Image (cartoon, rainbow, N blue to C red; front, side, top):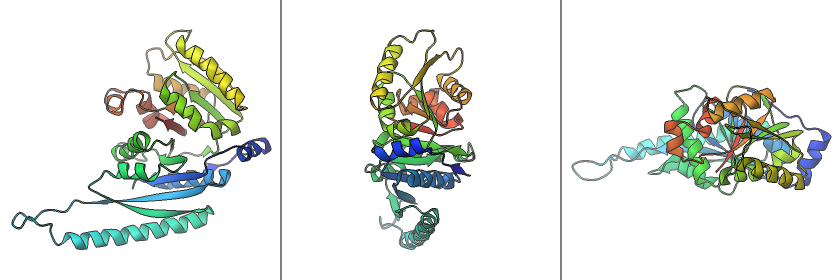
Length: 298
């Protein structure tokens, strides 16, 4: 997987003159896409002069209680020792990889015992500016694991999550950004969190999905957003798309493809994680189907 940087002189000066992503984290999920996430995070760290935190999660099995003595099986001590040694070696490999990538930062081991690894990762990244994770590499085999990390990080960390493709090249930082706008707290947060990308982009289009030609309240909110971004030096265009009989998520992906967007910015899980995953929703579509990076906020 290769990630390329396209930074014009204007874009570089804009990135340098504004607060950007000073601390970036990448969570290792154990899926093949981890390498793509690390490469993408390192590319951004070089572009923004950021520090990179690599989190290696170690999922520790709960000890089995001896039915006779109500004591943990003594053999688990050896199991834990072996797992910790394997985890230590993984961290050393990641540190070597960071040195190869020429970015400042460190890798650390987090032991998840009697706690969901995604929740542990979410707590660990609350002092970072951005979290990077890759899409499932082998759907559906990796989907449940990667989705658990994605949803946990998005809903429990309070940080934006950049979901990057695990098997396709794309430019970072993005040159052409599409904002999937709806007048919701999640979308507003996403725009705020994406500001370093928006300021440095060559073009930004704000897109509202509406079944009618006029977007109603969303149109009014979009007009205010255009004005707000102009105050930050971000020039935008805007459009309304009609999903027709299809889903909003797929309509947004299709439009992003037509305008050659490098990044979609979107609010995540505005209708709740379980409802969207079970019944379908924009977040689910973007997670499973987008072939370009998506920055989510909640």
